[in-house]
Length: 356
Image (cartoon, rainbow, N blue to C red; front, top):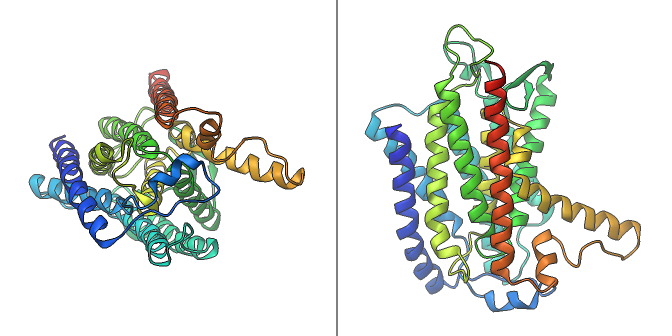
């Protein structure tokens, strides 16, 4: 528990103070946000606001985690190192996207194919290592599982390695892109991420308290390194909390694709490593809604040859176009996120109670 407090607290402090430094440096270097011309006109005032603030979130998380390991004098676990690889690696893909936008002075960065290739490489390496027998612990557990999971592994739903890798790729790319889509209003994705990562902190702590040792039972959780994953979850929660101070409306800095892709991939990593893959759909319900709104809009537009369901997608822009203030949209989406997170945690705990 001490590691969780150190990791989360230090990450929050570094993010809170470091973001102020990043704002000054990025402003001086001209690392300003480009804005879509076809978006809401109220967003045009955001042009030039410093971006790539996700670098601070990543740095604060990594420092917070390793400082916690230093304080407790414990070695990092395989699960934690894999999750950090996924988190930082996907952040690098986002950084390249942001840097191209800045250097080319345009609202589009990496081409979609190049971005998918980068995401596929990171997700593929993560999946191969997470399923590898080389990373088995003393009880034969690998960081990830060949079994599909909801609240824990579904014993009869076992996938061959190739299908398990495809599922991991799908979860990682879908979730990272979903958070990226939600990052369109000041503080929206950051505030939602605080709640979802906070939920995974609780999930990991509970799994550690009910951890399967040598003799698994129906009540315990057959996962590897839950306490170490809780330290990272707390660190990311703290880093996002500190960043939100500067990212709340009116935002002094944006996280950019550097932040949104890294945060989305970390959520996917937690779902995979904690054996709660399908639970992520509930905990991250706000990101699901944003993604589905885009899919519906694009599909309906193509089928009807130009007609639209929403005034603009993703969903948060639809409410902006209806005349809602940005702050109103963000707060109400935070409330919806809180309801999703509360429902997910409630289902997770209720399943354990039902087994007593």
